[in-house]
Structure formats: C-alpha cells, structure tokens
Image 1 (cartoon, rainbow, N blue to C red):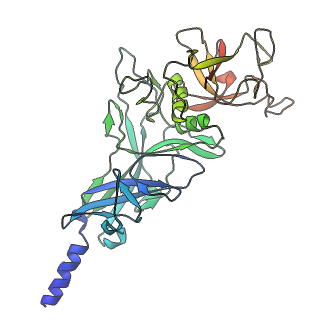
Image 2 (tube, one colour; image 1 turned 45 degrees about the horizontal axis):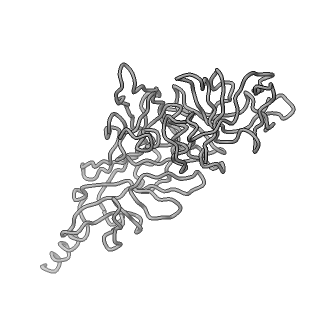
Length: 366
C-alpha cells in the first residue's frame, strides 16, 4: 500500500495539475528557428508557426509546457530539461485564439483639438477554426479593414491573444486592453508579413497594412528617428507611413523630412497633363525606369504647401484599353500605382485616384 501511495505522489509531482500553470505565452518562429515570444516581421515567402507555452514552478524550478524543445522566453534560452510536452498534462482544457486589431475601421487624430495621444479602441475576434489547438499557422487577414495582397498573398500586421482554460481556471496573454499612450502595447504578440517584390522599401510598406491612419502620428520619445507609432506597427499618417517603410528597410531618414534636400533629391516635377500622362516643364513625358521614376520613390502632391500628401511609387501601369493593355509602358501616368494611407488604412491606389494637386517626385539620397 505504501508503494502505491509513493507512486501516486511521484506522479502528482511529475505531472502538474492544471491550476499549477500560472502563466502562458504566445511564441512564434520563422522557417524552423527557435520559438520566441518576441513579435515577428517576416516575408510572405517564409514559413511561420505560432504556439502556446505554459509555465509554472515545480519544486523550485521553472517548468515550461510546449510542443517544441527549441524555446526562448523573454530572451532566455529554456533548457530542454525544463520543457515538458503539452501531452503530459491530462486535464480537460480549452484553448481560444483571438485576432487583436483596431475596432471600428476608422482613422484617428493626435492633433485636434490640441495635440494628444489619441485613444484607439481595439477588438478581439476569436478564430474558431484554431480552437483547442496548441500550434497554428498565423494568418494576418484582417476582420475590420480591407485586406491588401502582394502576389496573391495577404500582407500586413496582426496581433494575437490566446486563452487557456483548465479546471475552470482561465489564463490569458495580453490583448486589447494592454495599451500604452492610447495605443496597443508591445506586450501583445505581433506578426507582420511584408511583401516579396524584390524592393525592401515596398516590402516593408506592405507590412504596415491593416493599421489605422493616425493624423499627426508621432514618436513616443519625441525623436525624429525612432520609437515612432508608424514603425512600431500602430498606425501612421501618409508621410510617416512612407518614412517608416524606409526606416524598417534600413534607410536613415528622419520623420517629417521628405522634402529636405539633405536626405532626398528631386527626380521630377509635374507641370501639366496630357492624355493622363504627367509631363515635365518642357511638356515631355516623365520616364519610369532606370533613367526616371523608380519603385519606392516618394510621390508628393501639393509639395509646395505646408500640407499635401505623399505616397510611395509601387508599379508602372498603362491604359488598360491602350497599346500596352494595362502593363508597363515606362511612362509616368495616372494608371501607375502607389501604396499609401490617407484617412484610410494603407491601400494600393492609382496615381489618378490617390490624390489631386501639384506633383513632385523625391528620391532618398544614399
């Protein structure tokens, strides 16, 4: 009898009850790398996985429950001897995964009636098909904003929350109520998928989709170089969206300095239009390509005012009913595409539909 009691006690020590789990994390990896609870930016070409990790203390040691033995939490590599598989917990459980995103499909304003950090509401939407799954393949398709696609795949940013319920006890990772200065905090697990266009500026611009327009977006530290709402995947106004794509791609240009000739060169200025082609001062067409406008250039409307609008040049197009049937014609025209945000989540628009006014094209100075 004593021997049976001994083995029962040994089992209870080795296999914790559900209530013993006191913390959970969302972890993710890229192309089979170590699972970490850091947020991720990856290409749509990459293979991503996301998983739930449980944590408790057992006999003075931290124990982690995971289906992976390659694990890093808060920067600390977890020894395999401290990792147990979820299958070792035999209790009834319920797992629910949620997408966390802006709640109303609206735009926000930090500047009115006076400058402030606008409070942005967020929403959690359960992903029913992920219920009771420890491991999933993350999807960034939004439920509020309109999805943006690159080469047929959804791009942009999504945040996630997971809850674990065992024996009536529910534990949750941070979600919609985890905020900093009115915006979603970095404690909420983020996956950002960038494009695969061959141009890293545009690729990173794609990663900023599914985020709200914020007029007067700003750095949390007041810096023109970093800690900006835009590059933290919170939201941006048009100019900050464009600069953030450069910053994320590794180019050094301060926010609000696109027209500063210390950082950019003027490539072209539009003086007139003809048959939807944009012409220079000599009423000549403006070339798109190596000798002219290039992918990633700043397209600036009303550049000679204190306001205006800016987008990033995305793709050369033509009249769909013309000689080139909508394909590249190497001419700057109203059918060409830009990627932008303007009182609306980031989207791809034609030059003719994006905005109206005087146009000047700037290029980052290497």
